[in-house]
Image (cartoon, rainbow, N blue to C red; front, side, top):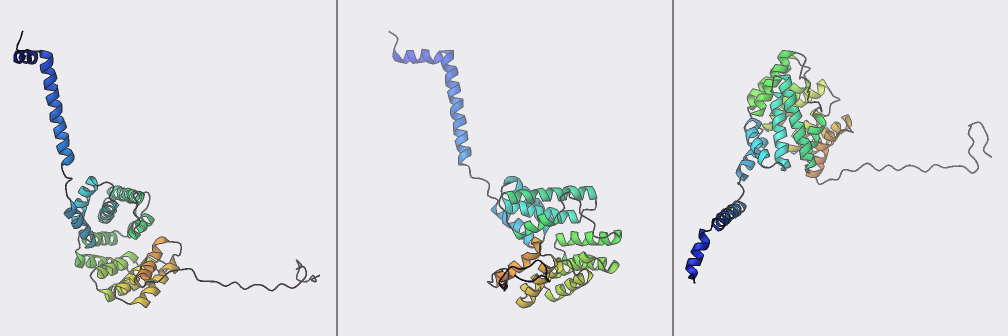
Length: 293
């Protein structure tokens, strides 16, 4: 009789058994590796996200852009990041001289905005961006004069990196070259708004309104400056002016809604009491000269 230990030794010498043992060992190693991967924490990029969003708030889109690109790749369903990336791209497009490259950037930005909306983004900025951005990505130049357009794009590039003095200088140069450039006055006012110089901002918004009183944007921007300055009644008047310019445009109502929120007010349509007509007895004749019977 073969002793039990010898039986085991003979068993393990069997090539089929050895192959089965090796396969089992490989399977166990793979199973252990998968468990380790499942337990490994996801990379924490909270600090990167917070920094990117802070840079957007500070208007430093140039520094925010690469961070947002990385975050969007890692978190493709984070609509806040997608919106931020779209905003940074829109800013980058404004300072891009090549029309074809600018168009591609604008199309990508619009695609990001649409995806953010599908994911549940309901921000005012997103609604405004989708309303303003052309579907074909072909934004019109700031001016038909090349030197004015160049100055405006120089201002946009400076604005996107938070170089506010350089942005103001470029916008004012564009305005001096062509005092009918609405965006030059509007954007100069917006830079002063970012710098918390509300009186200067209002002066430039007034110049924009003088150029085109039928556009709602300068009224709304001026209302934002007055609201931030605590001048509630004046802000309300500007926001109402914006709505009167474009009552069917979503963006025109943004300022008035923000004003209502700040003042805990409710915007509602006015009540109209329709008087009840007094109808005399008898049949009303179709002709004023015909008698009532």
